[in-house]
Image (spheres, rainbow, N blue to C red):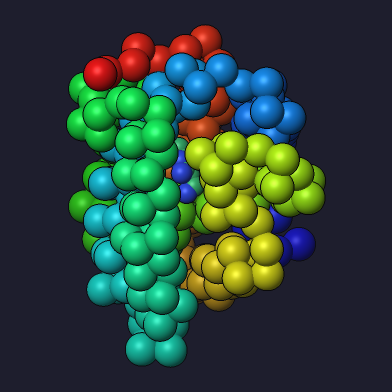
Length: 217
Ligand SMILES: Cc1ncc(CN)c(N)n1
């Protein structure tokens, strides 16, 4: 079994809860209240800050230029079209971009900083694999629904579906699978711990979004 499949199988409960969640089902069928999407996006914009730094660290730690290029191209997408999606959505929803962090966003920021500061490529990848693979899984079944949705819902699905995004997930998983056999037991345990905590935080983030984050105006 691929190491990344094995890691996922160890947290199947949280994984399923995070990738088949009432929040994303409501997002995809258009019944999600704009206020709830606004609160989610404000908190996710704080997530994005730590994510960009973590992805930049993966680029810095990739073993070769060839290994780094797909991450660098993905970083351009995140800081380009995804960043402007957030800003256009805040504008359309009438909310500010700089909300105070809720505990779920802070916990994710802390985890990403921990992975980055570990200086370990596999630890950085473990968190990125969870973040992107789980989003590909929840969004893919809804790829055909985007045309009927307001852009702040539909484009969020589009950003996390399609061949190019599936290639990003395949690349991140491939990098982690590739380095895994060369790791010691302690190094594997460290990366696995980050993977498990990241899945749990993905679930908690959607639970909190469904309950409704406070919205800053
Ligand atoms: C919390 C979270 N996890 C993952 C993603 C996917 N980029 C995201 N936007 N936000």
